[in-house]
Image (cartoon, rainbow, N blue to C red; front, side):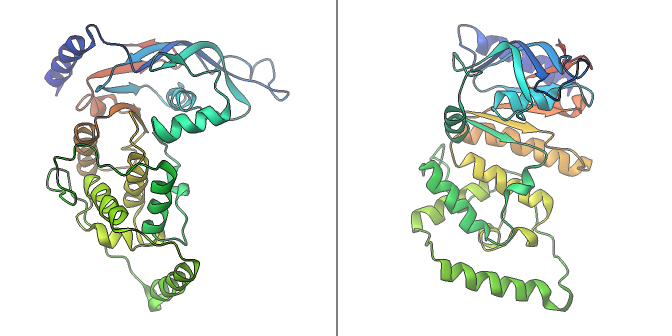
Length: 305
């Protein structure tokens, strides 16, 4: 796998020649601000972070816990907490400095260009609505219904690792009764799915490795495992057709087998969706298996390559 890193870097140099970076972070500094920030707390949380990501690359940003990896990802997506802000430096996306964006422009950027899958993303699913209903809402929000690389027929999951749905215990039929109640409420609320939307949703779920998309679409989040919910959210983000996808610790708490499946899935998604991917992880060795380049942040927040 070390050979892949060397080969990947050589290929990356060839791709970068004469090409403009999709993402360029320049001397980034992030501090805690506001009335609650003491003199010690106002010290930079990270400083002098600079790197570029070119179209089609997979770049891994690694380093020890607390060095600012996730903070960097949130800054790129405009999702820093109100008490934390960029105090120096620039973040260029497609040649434009996005640091000064207001919330409306950040929302549009996240809706159309940048997808961020964070460690706490599972809270983004509504527990009392089916996956079908929630993904349909996302489709309506994005307004994009074309499957990337249409040469691949929808519904084929042969090229991606398949994750079987675990059988969950249902003591005394509690889940069954809950499903009946929620299904009835959904029917009363209305909101039909068109055949085109249905086909697109099946395609998305197949692309992220589900062997039985219909089962997933008809399920509620509480009927799925945490890993399955994460891939549903991944499908939702991909439905917007992002150019840059940021995954924050995508393999945390996974065993070696499932970690390898997730990494293989990311490689396949890059091809299927023409993605540029920024991976955030403490697992340098694991990321080097799929990344074209691996960057490392020191505990002080500085960058090394």
